[in-house]
Length: 229
Figure 1 (tube, helix red, strand yellow):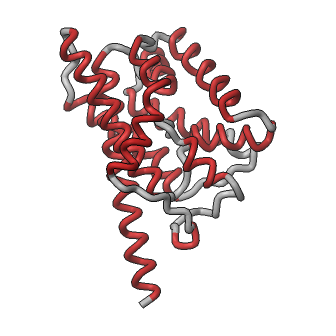
Figure 2 (cartoon, rainbow, N blue to C red; figure 1 turned 135 degrees about the vertical axis):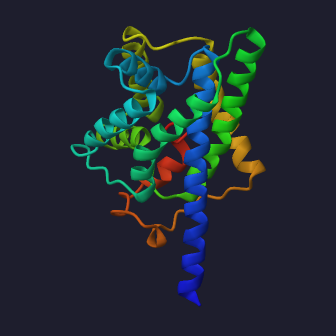
Figure 3 (cartoon, rainbow, N blue to C red; figure 1 turned 90 degrees about the vertical axis):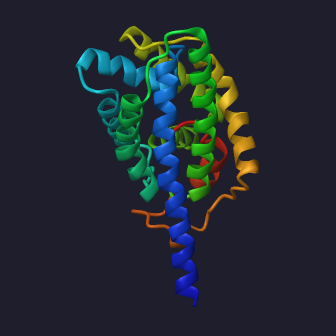
């Protein structure tokens, strides 16, 4: 009976995980199609894609893998959700870009931006609720916080300012959507988690992780994964 309950709980968490990743990819596509700017990391992927000729989704996967390599010196350990995040969000983003038309007027731009942010909040709530490991970018942040002793906002601000600057220099789109994302996505995710009644799943003993996250990392991830992946 106990094994059945554990298996059932795990299956629910996996459904949350993959539903969240799929919706996250679609949300990214909507934000990009708005033409008003996207999240700092997506600005970076957009810029690298323009320079390299790779698709946005492929570039996102490559950037995620590179970020994961930075986990090694800061001794972060990926979970099943971390690897799924790394490999799938880019694929889903490319699907979303294929399905979503570009915005040609202000009304559609505003709709795409608002809808993308709302969908991303729901997707993030599902992903966080699954509790199967932080995304590569968020794990980088929490690892640096643990190693440097700096405040979360200091490390996060430094990382995001760096990636958005590099992305912009490479041709990524920075706009009002980037600012709205930075200040609005955290509160939106909190609302989504309350509306969906999502509770954090922190009992990693039943999670199909490569290894259990270091102490404190999963707790920080539950707080600080606000639109990052």
